[in-house]
Image (tube, rainbow over all chains, first blue to last red; front, side, top):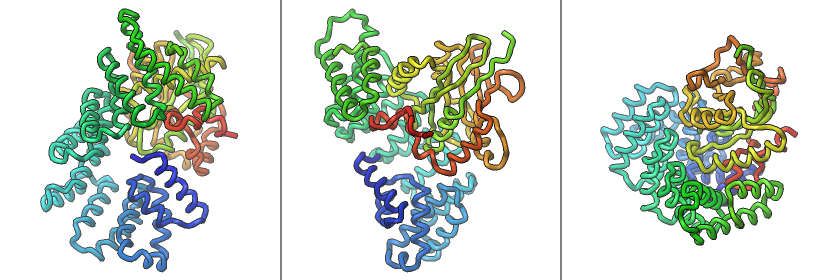
Length: 302
Length: 203
């Protein structure tokens, strides 16, 4: 999960390196720090750094971290031959290392040798049953084999122990959404909002799930969370602004004028619509008329 | 009914779908298909496609906004929703996800002959090796019992690409990494200056 500025920074560096402007090591560090998945670029740039003896020695002890990063990228790109080479280098430097052991298990995964990978993971867990990375790799393996029910089961077990792992909660929520298990997804986002109430993305995702669940109560709650997102993002989040309009329209449809006009909610909807129009006028003027007719069909009164 | 109700997809619409899937290899993606048909029993022409999402496909809000805007825009051009495209997260997954079926069901309410296309990763993978002109997707249509059935490679109701050299153009786009330029509705919602119409893509 990265912010817009962080993403722009990474893309800028990537362009720079791609066009021969240097900065490969900064790029690789940034990708590692932000935990991005850009395997093809990491493999390309990392490989060129590692193949250059002068660049490699300039890294000092960080050389081994780079070997690890590029090995994983190689596996992601299915360049298992390269991955094996890099892991061999690490094995020679750090024999008996658990961290290298994890890479070896990952290589088995990449080869699709699920049973062997499972054995490798189990033996690593015997030495350290609280190894978070191994637990999560087992979930990833289940997911890769299409065993979503098992992935969910293990992920839930993992979260009983490591309930502060936000990435795991997000992964679980996304698996639930892909299976259309919205109530369970909602629960995950509730946990995330409780532990990190100032992260707007969780409020937004929760609002999206509530809207998808439907029903008057959920729609009202959904509107509140879109409003919270707008609050936390200074009114700049387009999805939340649209969300308000969608909720108000859906609530209006369900109640069909049975309730007395809620001035506040109508005001909220027209404010969101105005914010959307302003944003489109500024940044996407070609689509402004399309936006206006969309808002009209949502019966937004301006 | 009788007669062959085929589906013909235009090259640009076809290529956009595959490029979108290639841009987001680690997640499921979807798209809607726009076109026209002379009526029940006649062929459906898929003229355009709009890539929709590459994350949290099962959520309604982005889908609803996208559908309103897309129908509005293409309605003026005489095109309507005629189908849906889905690519699964895993390359060996050939199951039609329930999300895909649900969205497909929704579209058939307005266009009963709607097509549901599922990316065929195996075909896509072997594309550079052969001279296959058929599209790298599986076609599903709703049968009499209202369930989605895979259309076999024999018989009527085939999906064909309008331009016979489309796969060659597709391979060209892939090797020139054109998939980096494609924009979907998700990208637009994150940054409204991005054009989900992809009007500059094939210029």
